[in-house]
Length: 594
Image (tube, rainbow, N blue to C red; front, top):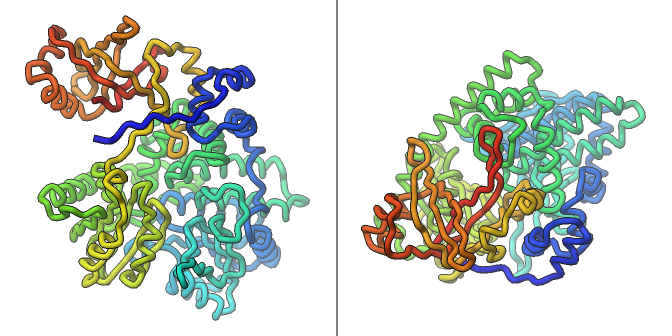
């Protein structure tokens, strides 16, 4: 059971609340998220697209767009090389739409996950050269493509890298020596010399910035109304990429996603509109949840189980019939991906529960028959369940391939770099990575990662960060409308978690025929007030806990509504406004208990 930790950042909540005309609780929540100066609060509450940082602040951006602008004017053939995940697909679509708008002779190539692997490779470079391509522009990849970029330069090609991943390095005398590829321009906010104010943007947002910068080269001959329409569409795609790549919703990322979701309610992109319709997502109620768990997986599924070209064609098409056909195919592929993921996740759990990984702080799980495209999803699920850095590895055509997902206390990319001699290829960042290695190196990888691991028991225990102790009775529609300003919530801008101690559970009843939701009647013993509290997940686990804590009969007594001995629990909950059949009501959701 995770440790509960109450955040304790102090401040003048009342005074700042009056200054910004919001509830002091909202100011407290912003303080807890590192937003604690009047300037930062103003940027958080009032920030708009006009507050995006200038693309020129990004190292090599002006150089890169000057190169591309000249190639467009000269009619040189440009090829965009992206990646097969949400971020890479969106970034490729952004560059394709932007370059085409400015008159480029441009096409694209997205590596096949199984046949090509991640990012730019020598085969793709040679194909581009043989096709008469003059300039390669990468997006969401390229920062670690030293060998293929050297090959492209030997052919006399121009190469522009746009990426957001960590720059490869090796340690010399305890110092990191960074290894930049020899491209004509390298645009990556994570470069050591970069001065960009916020490095946590995704590949799609870097691509968006590139189109913004490129616009400055064509303003005189550009139809500004048409460009503004394009820019708003690209805002949607960059926001989709930011959510899909699980970037922290801080700083300009939060503004981008907030504005992008508003645009997507009436999307200018035919493909996105059609995918929402096929997936029965109401644009007016669209949220980051729908991108992350409903629409995004469909975009990802095509790159996992088939060619990512389908998803890209969906984003680029202007034909309604083609859009419907492609969106339907993506939905079907995602259904197949779901069943494969469930099967592989269950096999991974069986391995762990059987004791095969006993005593290991870093889980290195080999699933021979797992489709390599879902290894990352499985690794993420195992990481969430056991709070351990997790690598899931599967058999590939030429050895082994895998994906890693990590916890906050363990920088997976840096730890993999310490054993880089094991890998034939690897890349990623603090929380996620992809890699390949020879079959015979599997056990060595497991042993060395665990031997190097310095995670403490506290690191592995997990922590639930709580915002404040607030009685349920504090909330009303006005307070919740102020708290709704925090949307969209996600990593780095987490949904508020409140704690209340000593809540008495009086009764419980299921909602609906599926028994997937249960609502409790609870009593606040300190304020003498009754409330309804809903639970949406692991109902069996809750009742098992009650049975162990209060006795087996207490569960049935709770369901019958005739508890005689008090069932007292400390609870962690979220709150919001629930809308059902046109009526809005306060809703409290149980998240943790003890």
